[in-house]
Length: 210
Image 1 (cartoon, helix red, strand yellow):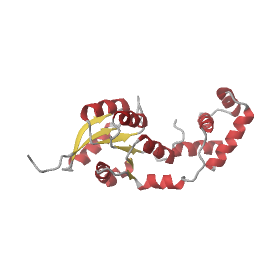
Image 2: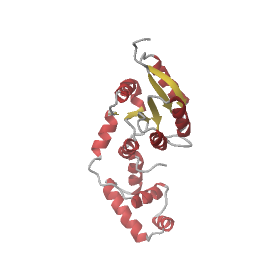
Image 3: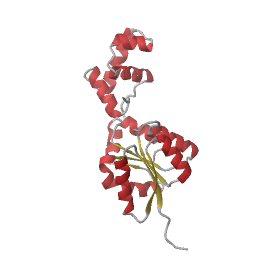
Image 4: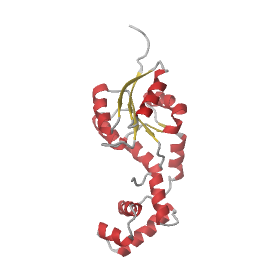
C-alpha cells in the first residue's frame, strides 16, 4: 500500500459548463486533487454530494432550480462536516454573511480563481476558513452598519420592482405614511441619495436579489 496521501476529492457546482471545464483543467494539474463530480443546479449538487461524498464542494450561488445558498443549507443539514467553498461573480457583504452563516468555509470571487482557488481548497481541506481579500474587505466596510428590518427589505424589493409608494402600501397592506417612513429609514441606513440609489446599493450588497 502506497504511503501517498489520498487526493482531495472535489465536486464542482456551477450552471455554466465553461466554468466547470475551466476548474477541471486547473485541478488536473494538481497531484493532490481529484475532480470527482459536477452539477449544474443546487438540486443536482445535493444528489451528487450524496453519491460521491466529496472532501470539498465548490458552489456557485446563482443557479436555477435550487440556488447555491439553499444547496449549502441542505447539504450541511445532512452532513454538518461538509466543507463548501462559494464561487461567485457577485460580491456583497450581506451575501457573504449569509453564505458563512449557512456553513460555507470559503468565499471566492470567480475573477480571482486562477490565483486563489488551489490554495483555498487546501486551506479549507485542512479544516480552516478562507475568505477572498475582496470578501473580507466588503465585510469590514459594512461591519458597523445598522441592519435593515425584514419589513424594510420587503419595501426595498418593491422599490426595485419599480412600484410607487401607493402600490407598495397596497401590496404590503400598510399605510402610505408607514411606507414613506420606512423609505426614509432605508435611505438613511444605506446612505442612499434616492429610491433608485437605495435599490442599486441593496442589489450590490446582496440585501435583495432580482
